[in-house]
Image (spheres, rainbow, N blue to C red):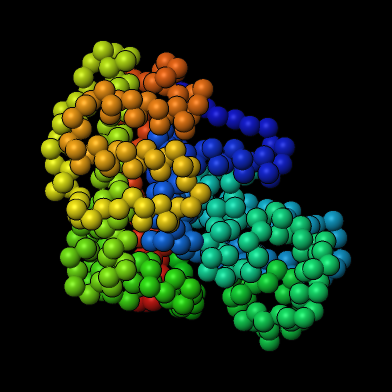
Length: 409
């Protein structure tokens, strides 16, 4: 069995490798046709602060707790130990301890569950959760990455010093923090002995805080509505995937119109682009094996697309693009043309094929399989690339389930 290895040069190098390995996860499968930016733009609206590699809600607290512990260290204890190094050491200690506690068996949500001392991982929880910690203001990072943020706390520039002096520290824990400066702008209360008998279950006070942050910061978004709308939550739990959930939720009378519209847009974009990914696989199978794999799937898609989309008549690509302003213009044009040909019923399959070939070439350039015959990884009857978009559906359900479970204790 093939394996991947790397030389451990630096945190930056590890994070770069981690970003590549993230593509191996279900939602992060290689984006052959450049739809990922638009998919992620919608996912950011539905589940802000959540990513495809987050596992449990508890990590939103573990990282700030570690940084609180560093703030409490006396100068002599900090000697020779930067915040970055301390965070890394503590994350690994927690990883190994939790892996032991959960017997190194998958399913608990422990990041690095299979690792034993002194084995390490490519991406630590701090990197995986950093954007979410900023989104929900567990840490006021000012939008900096984890390494840049921690480095700035060691060597603050003049602007940050003046800002701290002028604005003061309005962290929620001023009184509790009286013995030391809140260097890391932490916005959750500290917790004594948080690491004793640590599990990945949230405490009730943590769940209450997290719920409050979601309801205030992500007000009028799906992630917040799921916490307060029991009918919607029931559908969310029962659905096997995002497509099923969006279809059921779109007819729910208690769902706010703005959320319904976004769910329909996300559902229908996924249904529409499924045809493009079917075509991609049809072309690969024909080119490499001269076989008609997925042709029947294409015919079924084309016959049923009008009814498979929730609101076929009102689908508007321009609304979709408004949620992903960094999308390449060529990808936007591809979606426009694909939608146009869909409404025409794809009268010319050669035009369909050329659309997909050109789009893959624009996205993958010299690595394009169809244009440059880069087919070493193509296997007979094996699907390549994306299918339906999940928009972080599974990860959102896990995080929200952790919160609701703790609230109901």
